[in-house]
Length: 194
Image (cartoon, rainbow, N blue to C red; front, side):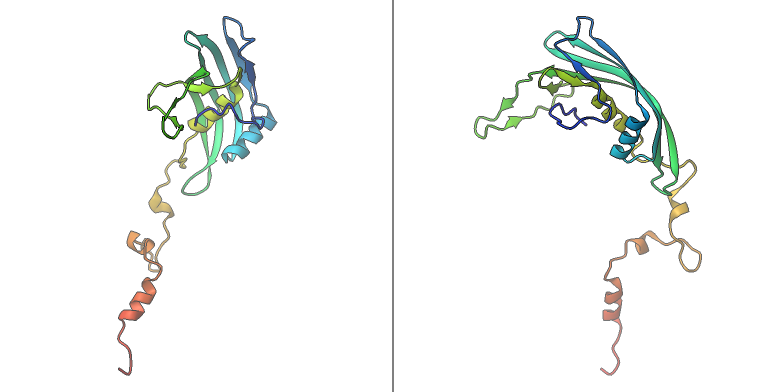
């Protein structure tokens, strides 16, 4: 999820650093999300809860116009199990490192004038302007750290499949049965009076 510096609306966890006023030694931020900030992040990412969330981040200016944001986030997120919808808790302790470059010049296609996006693995993220919302970066890292498919321990897919009338599990073929399969069966049945 790339950082969106052009984002106009206020971030749920706004912590803005003015890069022009940042000292030579960089900036360090201790972010502890308030109750209202955690509630806003829960709504944004569709979590069931976020009982604790904090981060420590540093912002450093490197040669060549690069800005490096490094940090560690910690917390606990509660999500719905993908099989049962029961609450599933996950403890978070993740590090991150993102490199930005101010005024990154884009290579343009000579015919169309459209920007050509390079496929460099370590290419820096573009950053326009001198304001960097470290809180938004941390919020994005939270969404990446949370398990995309939370599952309650011990639950298997077979445990939640519907049972057939006779007590056996519904077969995968029956689950994927075509919606018009009943009509096809009627079509193949011999007709009376012919």
